[in-house]
Length: 304
Image (cartoon, rainbow, N blue to C red; front, side, top):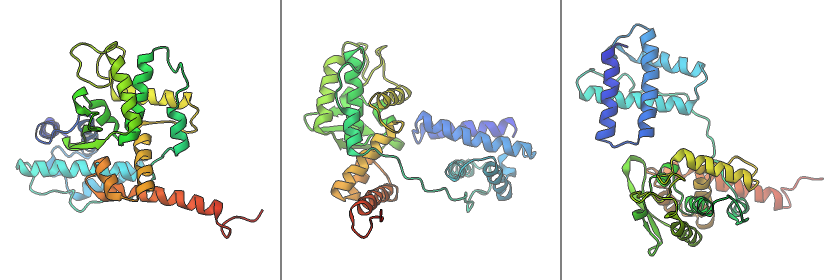
């Protein structure tokens, strides 16, 4: 791919950043996927995007699949290419979208990992002396309580400012994917943990810092740092599986659905644009039902 072809990618990413206001993480994924395609096409002596047809892209998908890339990742790469060609069509660079009708191999359906209620209690129980710094301990507990209470994504939590909280109204204002906003409830234990953290936050935060959660240096706590802190807490509290932020989000959704049976409410809580995305949690609920059935129904018990 020639220099002009690479510049087209840069122009597309600028369009996504300015017009669609996508996050830096999403832009990085688009760049990686498009550059992978450009590298493959370059090896086939295609110097520009207008020379690419469906056969070239089908060969690209096949090569990526042979290289070990799974169905979900291939779907994402095709989605990036599809959006990119729509942009090139709009700019008059190409005359057709060669990605139209192209499908990736089906990805195996993976159910998200969750914690049961006992595991959540063990994670959040106060053991005393969790860290040498009371402020950091309070911050970490507030993070976990809020993620589990309100089903926040990692990026959503990291972007929160003090002004986003309305604890009198028991809510938090969240900016999700595509800069879409929603207001979600904050439970009692999460509110208590946040109040404790806010009383100690001034001992760490820089004077001009607006972030709700800050690091020891006084600036906004990064998503990566949240991941590391949760992993450490999971190990300290003796969880069987490696704790990651989305596990708290998935657990929140699963437990709310298990108690209420209201799929639409869970969709609104999580900020899913399509309820089909939320329906994954109905499978989790069925798994729980199947386990209870197998362990309690007289006709389901195995003979010993």
